[in-house]
Amino acid sequence: MYHSEEIIKQLQDNNILAANALDRAVAGVRDAVRDQVGKIDAGKTRLINYGSCFTTEFYEKCTEQKSEDQRFIAGIYHLLKNKAIFTEMLEVYFEVVFKGRDIRQLQNIKRMLMQLNIHIAASTLTSRTFALGVAMAVSMSLNASLPFSRLTGTTIGAAASILGVYGIVQQAADSANHLKVIHPDYYQALYIVELEMMFFLIEDKLLRAGALQNRWLADDQVADIIYKLVRLS
Image (cartoon, rainbow, N blue to C red; front, side, top):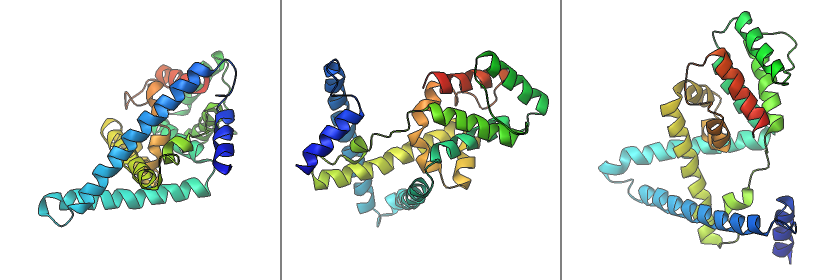
């Protein structure tokens, strides 16, 4: 009974029980199963790599995975401790973006945002306060309700669930390594605050907004990214 009530609650929370949402429900189930199977496979591969730790060939990979596991746990600790983790990660991103920009450039970006009807609260216009103001505006507009049921895979069985959860660590590691390649400055900034393994939580949002396609952004590009993150999330 408990599981039934939990499933119903998850469906209600995601508006899947709405009378006109059957097609979305079917798509959601299909996506959940596909995602979970992928995570289980990733978890199996990661565990197999650990099984080869004693061979010279896999020692370096094994050491890398252990470090990723430790940093994932550190990120989860941040997530549990800090309910504003989305704002924190976004603030780090915008601090990187605004770094080196003078007050004239910040005012220019703020003016362009006002023309788009986006108003950023900042007591004083510095790169740091503006980064926080933008991060708060963006995080308020994001759908921050993470699909934890799809992440944990609680309906597939204990062993599969363990593999699925461990597959999340692989997903987080893949996202962090991808960020390290395409935007090393942001990766390094997240690494310093032990949040690079949580980047996978907002990766899709930033990619869809074009926030990671170029490390050197003009003022109008920055304003466009902020607009997309706020309005199109």
